[in-house]
Length: 597
Image 1 (cartoon, rainbow, N blue to C red):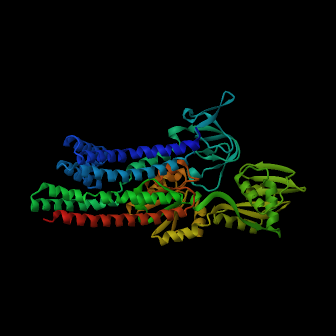
Image 2 (cartoon, rainbow, N blue to C red):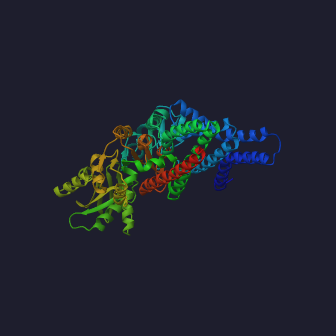
């Protein structure tokens, strides 16, 4: 069967499974009522049906309620368990079953919505390599990653993810380490360079000697940090439970008063039954279900209703730089000319020289050339110095493109103005690529990770929604971070952070009393996402660890989805409070009628 047919069938199965309890309870209640109304059979049969419906439908509520009592907590489940137990004790079996049915319907609706959200998140996951190519006995064989041992030589082809932590023994390439280290620009790897499991080999072939595999890799350690953070995360109490903390004692006092004034235990139990918080027990699920469904249509997936309740309380928002504030891809952001050359001339020379190069920076240069519709002929000669630059010949002219040291080693002198411009670009967090034609330098291409155009406006929107402070976190260099932070207008930034340092920063803010939201997309963000009060992952380009760890996932990688989430959180909370208010009015009227002599 095709995947397209499997997904609808899976949804139908989910609906059927989640409908079992409400349908079963409703059927038992109806059968009990019919037997009683038409006086069919003895009383104990219809009573037994109602009791079974109550126990079957409310079993999880009873268990959760008694667990909360032992933990010394007063929750909605405690209130429901007390009210239902008292109702059953005086023989009011069908009213108890009806209350269970109402809550079962609301619970099934919320469970279906959240299950659908989690399934959508799981569909995004496809990151870690499961197989690896290993050189053994002069042959290359494919084996499961789980079977790799220290010392194995792993062959990593262009476009593949590196399956182990190790050292390059042969080959040269550029590796995208952003998921692990947060660096926005690819890192050149030569023999002797260290590489990390889960990073992307972008250009050349690499032979890697395995040093750590499986549980010993950097990736595995990050996952361990995530698990520790989830285990130590403080439990969050929803608004209905906070309300119940004082409402249940109040109702018990009223029930005692009702018993004393009426000398009738049924009146006291009726007070508990009338006040039983089914109205505001379903106030949260119904509002949350509507909010989660609405956000899903906006490409924002929420894993649990409690996070939707908490979102509007975020006071300190932490945002990873690479892939979140920026696109995570190098781009030519400026062309600077020397010696009277034009920008198109400089760009054309660079494109000719880089035409046969597989380096990520070369691709960014060629992309701009295509955007400007430049005609780019084939070079007459091409040679690449990995990690340094390229040399080409066209129209009998030698063209050099690369680092300052590469041009100097090739006999090209750098003037003071050129050196000054290179230094300025470095201070601005950009990579300076020099272009020389003949014996002189004709221009400079400034390459950087492009900032998403909507970010400055989104930052202003966050502030208008009550976010007190926005801090950018990154594993990138200080100069790069400072340049990006200044351009987008965040309050603060932290640079050069390892995954555990990001997590420590979250813990520090929480200890100071802040409600912390964390937005990220990489494996290096996962520990902080796990510990934050609300973790938000950029889903479309995010890693599986980040998506699995986060509480909220943005499907379209547009950070404005965070604003949608916070706005919807406030709206859902107002709806929950309104629902609870009406339930209080209903309870007050019911109690007044019941207590009245």
